[in-house]
Length: 623
Image (cartoon, rainbow, N blue to C red; front, top):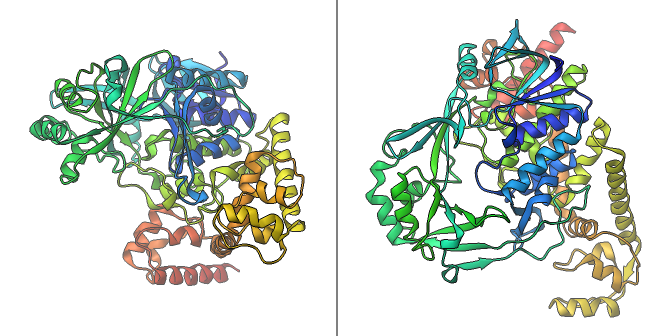
């Protein structure tokens, strides 16, 4: 093996896989080093992709040439479009996956790219030259040189599994050892290190479940693909099941609370607020009569099921006891116990907006080591790190994803500007411009950037061009076509809406709620050959055109602040016109623009005004 690589990716999870693919698509020679080649693309927690905001991120990753959407479609055994009762801006696709098929699909996609090589090894340390990374050293002493390194270690850095107060195992996840030496090196370099925790629920044998006691949840009947470039045949379908954790389970957990690793004092790390353990739920929500539990299939070739909603760090015998207190699980057999895991992360204010470590040139962090939780958040960071590691080596300006262009941009900006005090999870509420950042327009938003960067194949570029032309053709037809009352009123009557009095342009007619654009075109006598997704996306834009224009105006105002750049070497502690807290926070984060400075916690409007004066004064002084 040639020891010289452009980029070395440490880790083969969702972040590492996307980082390797992004860099390879940009022509870099990539080495992925992982402790087990068999677990590349492993779904370490629940076997699902997507959900609130996360489904949009999965499509954004796909639009940028990533793996996640394709792997999801190849492994998908159940699909739901969440939030369909709400506005289209927050519709969120979610797919249950066959765990084994997903892992195989990720590995297959990576191996298709000849720029990526693989090595099964544990990275013991980074090779450094002054303030720059120049490679890695593996546990057997092998040195591998690389011009840049992307560290995507997930929960492996000094990871420790807890089951009850007696069982503690050094591990990155069940069955895989923790990584200690490189974590110690990071700390010795002066990086700020903290600890988070997360957890997983027990798994059960589906053959021992009484499904007659459960509510069945089948797939939505939607013709929907996560991949926007490929049409992939589905492998099969399986239902999910819903039950409840009631008073009997709550009593068992309360009786054994002192035996929980978290409540018994064994774990000090902060856990994810939005995915709490059953212990947390019962302690923090004592008046809740019951808690929903989902039984999710692990795959097509197994009866094992994931018990979503019952994450725990209680001893295994207690887990089996409380499982059997759940309706439908009275005689269940547990195949794997749940556990909590505590691990190192690096507060992400130490990173640039393109995820390069400020202290070490050429070293990028992506994924859970930046304080996030979730496959999709990890994948989005992997794309950002992979693109920018490649651009660094090509002496090109980094790509900073804006909050107005993608959820990936919201994610990264939140991390590097605001930091984290709990494992970070994306929600639609975190995005100011969520009507512009929808799952249906991810390709239109980010495909042109991927094309400009040179990340798309000829076939993918053709798909993008067809979609853009299709959208333009629909908009032109809607603007030029009219619908008469006699043709429109049957549609409106079915919807219980006020009838039309005079002929209208379709662009105006579509502002009415619940009117399908395809129905409007048909009633107007306009023949238009367009895909369902393009019509749906155009329908949303026509219906909410006024709201979108307001968001675009807000984006324009934000752009003015973004255009006001701040020198990277500004001596904040000398700026006495700013508050002490503002000086401390700004010196730590060193924002690139006034817009980013305005999102730093502790920086007031008066601080921003004084910051502008200070920057302008220094510009005049050097003019």
